[in-house]
Image (cartoon, rainbow, N blue to C red):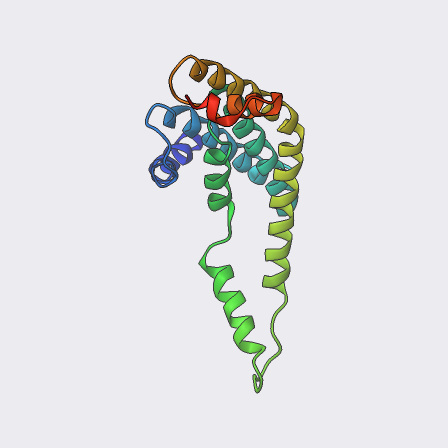
Length: 186
C-alpha cells in the first residue's frame, strides 16, 4: 500500500517539476527526494502513535527542506524544486478554502451567524508549522550553501577570465585594485 501511494504521486510530481523548469536529468533525484518526504509524512500521520498535524507538518517540511538543500549543495540547483511541491502536496484542499471564504462572507455586515474561527486557526497553525520546519532546516544549511555558491562563482570567474568575455566578479576585483575599467574591457 505504501508503494502504491508513492507511485500515485509520481504524475503529480512530474507535473510540478515541469512547471518549475527542472531539467529531465535532475527529475529522478528531485522526485526521489520528494517521494521520501511524502513517505515521511505518511509514516508520521499513520503511525501507531500519530503526531499532531502541526508537528507532523513541521517535521516533514524540515526534512524536505534539508533534503532539498543537500540536493542544492551537490547539484547546484535550488532547494525549491523539492520544497515547493512538498508545500503544495501538504497544503489544505478546497474544503478549507471554502470554509475560509464562508467565514469571510459570514463576517460581512448583516450576516446571520458569526464567522467560524476553526478554519482560520487551522490555516494559521499550518502556515506556522510550514514556516518553522522550513526556516530551521534552511538556517542550518545556509552557511554551507553560501560557501558552495561562492566557490562555484569563483570557479566560473576563473574559467571565464581566460576568454574574451568579461566576468563581473573579475571586473569588480580589477576595479577594486585601481585599474581603469576602460583598460579591462579591451
